[in-house]
Image (cartoon, rainbow, N blue to C red):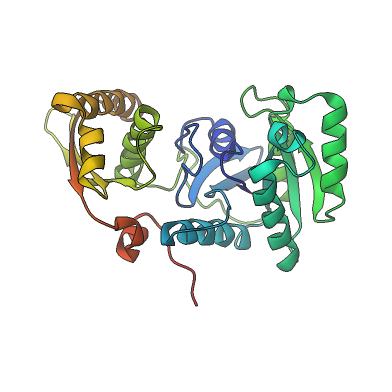
Length: 297
């Protein structure tokens, strides 16, 4: 699943899988690495690859995210291009989202790769504008099917699931039936905390933050002790994350712990630490820990 940042890919993946496997915020470029959500439709098992939004990269981290998105598309049996219909219907070019989507379409053409067009948030677009939008995308001649959906309400999503299931090649299932994602609990726990961080500080904090689970210890009483580090690039950012008297990081920890306890169905002891690591977003080792690689050449 590819698309411009904030097109709704993670929301759709979570809806189709039936549980939360990808974090969702209103801030663009929330998803950083390829994440696979797994669900069954009839006799088919579908592995949905939620990719970072494809955009014009400015930093090494951006380049690695875009590389991950195109890598996911290259390896897939089907490619779904998710489009934020209201933003593209606002003008002929759709603003920045339109530029990013146009770049994806050109990328599909250069790779001679056909895709399925999925127009999202259709409940926020007038019918005549929607028809114009479909006509504009049809001219690109890279789409073999078009679906109209609302990832928020679920409208039209069953049709997309049925279509994907029918396209799956024959072969053994790749994951156990009850496994909804291919990330470890340690990785997803870090993602949950990063989501709470973004939601709490989305206007104050830049993208230069990441969360890593440093310690995971199962205790005798059935609970789990998790230690995580929030990395920022400057002391000023550390002060923002900590908040006055440590109040902000405490609230972020409380929100993350509550969700983790619901996910893991057991008591969680969560300890958060904030450290400064200058230019971590330029460090290839940090990329590899997030499942990212810089493009070669």
